[in-house]
Amino acid sequence: MATTSALPDLPTGDEPDGTERPEALTVIEPGVQTTVQDYPGRRGLQAKGFFPAGPVDHLAFRVANLLVGNAPGAAGLEIPMGRFKARLGFAGVIALTGADGAKPTLNGEPLPLWEAVRVAPGDVLACGIAKGPGFRLYLAVSGGIDVPEVLGSRATYTMGGLGGLDGRALARGDRLHLAPEGVGRTRRLRLPQSLRPGYVNDWEIEVMRGPHADPDFLTPDDWRDFCSLSWKVDLNSNRVGTRLNSHRFTWARKNGGAGGGHPSNQLDGSYPLGGINTNGDVPVILGPDGPTSGGFTTIATVVHAALWKVGQLRPGRDTIRFREVDFDEATALSKHIHYLLDPTHLEEL
Image (cartoon, rainbow, N blue to C red; front, side, top):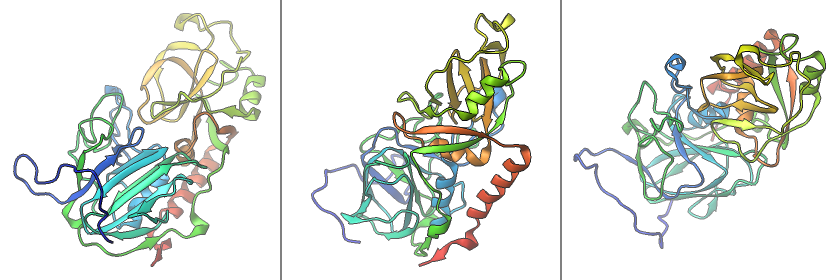
C-alpha cells in the first residue's frame, strides 16, 4: 500500500532505552475510549477487587486475532463507536471486525470487515463514526500489540487505571508496538459470511435466573416482566456497566432487611461478570471493568456465550429482550461460539 501524505507530524524513533521494537501504529485520532485489550483478561483476581477487563465483545475480538494468525486472546484494540485513525508502522496483516457503518478505509480505499488485509509502513487506517448496527470495532495486528503484562494480562482496566498503555485510553500521538513474529506475515483469512454474528438494533440476550430472582427477591410477575419487556439501553453505559431504563418491580419483600431499606438491597456480596444488578429500580449489566462486589441484588446473569452482544449494544438507541435459558442451552450456545472460532472454518484469500 502507498504511503499517505499530508498527515500531521507524529513522533517516530526508538524507545527511550534504545530498544528497538517493531512499531504497530501511531495514533492520529484516538476516538472516544480506544483501549488495548486481551482475552480473557485478568482472571482469578475478583477476590482482590479486579474484574477481568478484556474486550466487551469477546467474539469479534477473538475472530479478529484469528484472521491475522494470532492466538485468539492476543492483545488488540477495542474501538467504541469508531472515529479512529492511525498510521501503521509495519509490514504484515491487520483485521477489523465488529460494528457496521464506520466506513473503514486503508489509505482512503474501503477496508472490508471480517477479513485480513496486508499493510505496509506508512499506511493509514481510518474509521468514521460507527452508525451501526453494533457499537464496538476490534483491530488485530499480526503478532499482537506489545504492551507490558500487568497481573498476568495486557488488558486495560479503566476502573483501576492499569494494564494496556499506561492504564488509560489511547491518545493522539501514542505509539504502540507489536511482537516481532508478526512482521512480514502475509497470509490473508476471512470469516465466511454465513458465520458472521448478526448485529441488530433490537437484541435478544440469553440469561440464567438469579442469583437473586424469584421467589425470595422478585415475584413471579416481576420475573415475567423482566423477560417480556423491551429494555432500552441508556446513554450512560460503558465498559463498567450497561444501564437500562428504570422499572418499578413489585419485589417479594418490603425492604432489603439488614442490607438496606430498598428491596433491591442485600448484604454485600460478590457480583458475577454479566450479572444484571438492580440499583433501586435501574437494572445494570455488569461489564468487564465493573465492580466485583456490592449491596444490590443480581436478578439474572447473561450467559457467557451471549456476553459478546452486550459489547455491541448502542447506548441511547438499542433495545433488549431477555430470554431465560437453562444450563443445557447455555452450554449449547457456548459450543456454537467455539464452532465459530474454529480456524479451520476460515476462508483463505
